[in-house]
Image (cartoon, rainbow, N blue to C red; front, side):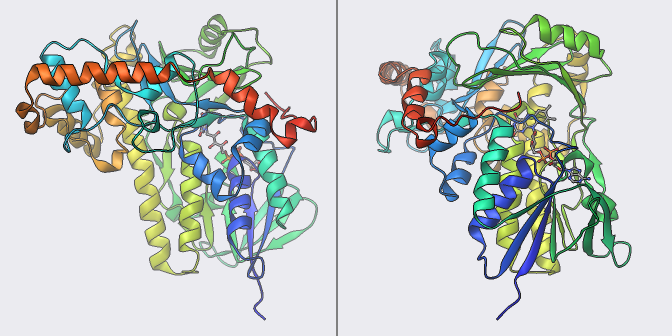
Length: 506
Ligand SMILES: Cc1cc2nc3c(=O)[nH]c(=O)nc-3n(C[C@H](O)[C@H](O)[C@H](O)COP(=O)(O)OP(=O)(O)OC[C@H]3O[C@@H](n4cnc5c(N)ncnc54)[C@H](O)[C@@H]3O)c2cc1C
């Protein structure tokens, strides 16, 4: 009989419990045992409520149904992000989840739209996205199952109560034999400097030895931070924001099925609607604005009555050079941080877990570790570039922050992508097809479009697009309001019927 390998997860925030739940679900208990150490005294970062659609695959791989998840986490559905005042003050565009329009004979839609607009079509590109049109009307229903149907052309994510999600996953993991230890980690033990971790010493006198250690200790990076190969690569020259003030408030009416990202003088402000409250935060750069001014901006623009005291958080954009060193893998904030403009941190946790599971057979194997590090750091860079794009494309000149954003020297990887889009509307496949909505939303239009568009007579092209716009509007009109959809879903869950409810920290 083989002795099971022991995996120790340090930290029980969203990253820790997502990792514990996924490993408990995917790894055979005969071969692996899992322990998670967390400290209620230290607590979690307590933010992280907006997601991208991949979270649905995560839940579904764990066998978590949508209705139980939505009931347990007070979640609402998210069809995209509305960016206001980013291109210019007074403007707004939605970056929707799913397709923009429909490709025609292999020609991507933004080329068709650009050509039609030059021929006189005067319709914003978001009118060709089911997700964006539904979001503006606060409507929602899951996409249609038939790929032929217009209502199958979008996807969605969630806004969720992060603390409730961690609690939910904790129950899930504990039911699958994950052992939870409540204690503070006092010391990380190694036989020699730079060597594998042998054990964690806890403040209750215990020592936890293990074969693998997953560092989910958040910004503290208690385990990975000691390795020289895991030095932190600072990206704050491009992503200048380094602080956030957060404050939940009461709801202001029917829920919006989208996150709001409103540009402010020295950063931007989020609004994230949950079923029972709205999460708010102002992400800013402290070189350009004081805490008092940031708090004042946030308070004076809250959509409802404040529900708690304000909290301030510090952070720095960047990523560890190596996320897996020896027998230690960093997942979550310990691995790196990209500000929440595109709600990508939980997705990066998911990537870390998925890749760890893929590479685990190569135990203590350099090739597996190197591949993991390459793939993960590439993900961080792709997202980093996409977030920088929003700041760089601004046409605002009204504050020093926005003027400096426009003047920054970009990473070479991003310069190339911007030139490819500006010159010929090309979008790199690794960029998840998200670029057109943001580039066009912020006035970066391709100078040339796909040469095949010229074969379509202009009036025919405009006619097709007008027809598509009407079809989308007609289909969206048939969808229910999101709150009605959620009420009917939650009313059906056993959790709700038994009176349990996601309460918890706001
Ligand atoms: C302002 C802001 C907004 C954000 N918004 C979003 C968003 O909208 N969408 C998104 O996807 N992400 C967002 N994020 C990121 C998101 O919050 C994190 O990715 C997510 O919460 C995971 O955090 P974590 O588990 O890595 O760290 P944490 O939540 O900090 O958890 C760390 C854990 O380690 C434990 N720990 C630490 N030290 C010790 C010790 N010595 N002994 C024992 N235990 C210890 C703590 O108790 C805790 O359990 C945001 C982040 C910030 C800062």
